Length: 314
Image (cartoon, rainbow, N blue to C red; front, side, top):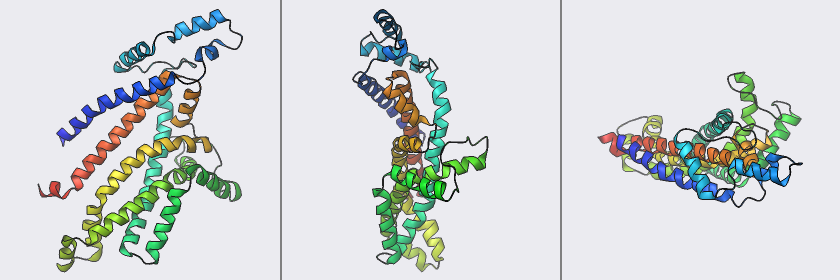
C-alpha cells in the first residue's frame, strides 16, 4: 500500500507541471491586455507600459512561468493581478465552498445511485429495472443547469421550500447551509447518480452469476447477507472508479451550478480570472483542483485494493 501511494505521488509531479504549464501557455492567447484594466480607463500609454512591466507581462512566457513555478515550489502561489490579494487566501475562501458542493453531490449520487442500481440488478428486464434505466438515461441527458433552474422554479419560487439564491457557511448555521446546498447538490449530482446506477446494475448482474454467490446461498446464508456482504462488495470496485471519475467532472460542472445558484465557490473565481486574464489565480486554481483529483484517484485506488479479493486472501 505504501508503494502504491509513493508511485501515485511521484506520478502527480509531472502531471502538475504539465497542466500548469499548459494553462499558463493558453493564457497568452486570451484576448485583452490586463495591464489596461489594472492601470485604469484614463491611464496614459506610459502608465500602461509601466503597469505591464511591473506585472511582468513584458517578459517571455517561459520566463514568467519559471518565476511562478519557483515561487509555487516555496508555497507561494503569487498574488492576484487585480486585487493584489494572495492567491492562497482567495483559494482558501472559495475552495471549501466548492468542495462542500461537490462532496454533497457525490453523497447524493451514492445515496440514490446505489439503491437504484441494486434494485435494477435484482429485477432484470422487469418494470423496476426499466424504470431505473429510463430515469438514469434521462438524468445523464438533462443538462445540469437546466435541472438546476427547474428545481429553483418549483421548490424555491413556487413552493417556497428553499432559498432561491446565496450560500451560508456550514459553521455559521448548519440547517441554513443544508437548505442552500440541497438543490444545487441535486442538480450537480443527478448525472453522477444516474451513472452510478447504470454501472452498479451492470456490475451486479455480472456478480450475481458468479459461482461463489451460489455457494454462499447453498450454505444457507440469508439473502440480504449474500447481497450485502458478498455481492455488493464484489460489485463495488467499478463504482469506486466511477465516483473518482465523477469527482473530476463535478469540479468542472460546479462552475455552471455555482453561477446558477450564485454560490461563491471556485467556479465563479475561475470564470472571472480567465476573463480578466489573471494568470496567477488561474494557475492556482488549476494546481489545487489537480491535487484534489489526484488525491481522489489515490483514495479510489486504495479502496479498490482493499475490495480486491486478492487483498482479502493475503
